[in-house]
Each structure stands twice: as C-alpha cells, then as structure tokens.
Amino acid sequence: MPINKIHHVAIICSNYEVSKKFYTEILGFPIIRETFRTERNSYKLDLRVGQNDWIELFSFPNPPERISHPEACGLRHLAFEVDDLEQTVAELESKGI
Image (cartoon, rainbow, N blue to C red; front, side):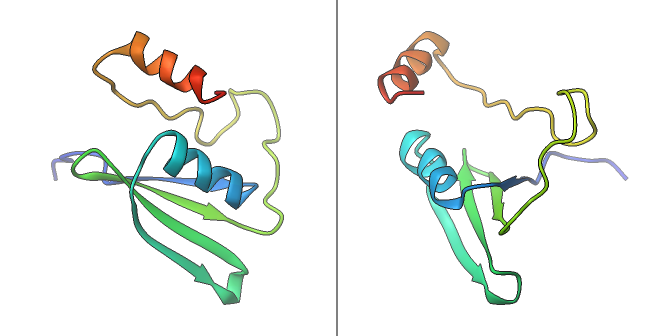
C-alpha cells in the first residue's frame, strides 16, 4: 500500500475569526467550503493550499491548551513551500505578521 501524498492537514484553532482571517486574508488561501456544525457549536473551514492540498481548520468553544513544550505529542508545525523566501517574509511583515 504506497502512500502518494499528504491529503490534508487538520488544525484546531482557539479563535475562529482570527484564524480564518489569517489563513484567508493574510496567507490568501481560498475557501473551499465553510460549515457551521450546530451539534458541536463549531466551524469547519476547508482551505485550498496549492493545487491539490488543503487545510481543515476546526474551531471548538474551549479547546484544551497545549500541555507542554513544543516537543509534546501533536502537530508541531506546519510548513509551506514558497518560491521566494525573502519576498514572502517581507510580504508577511508588511501585513503585521
């Protein structure tokens, strides 16, 4: 059973509106779909990254905080490939990141 690629990355955020703005307005990822899940009082936002990848951004009313240092189990970081690192850094800095 060969694995071909990463299908998607799921991220749980603590502030949906701030996270949505960051991923859509700052990083410029287009929205595939946005769903409010009433039974969980939470949003699920699917964002297009590149041509075939996406992020699932979840929100929950009170998600638990990370319990320890970056070496704790769970997602440590998310990395994106860019064509020009210096240009990308400058653009993010111009947006207050």
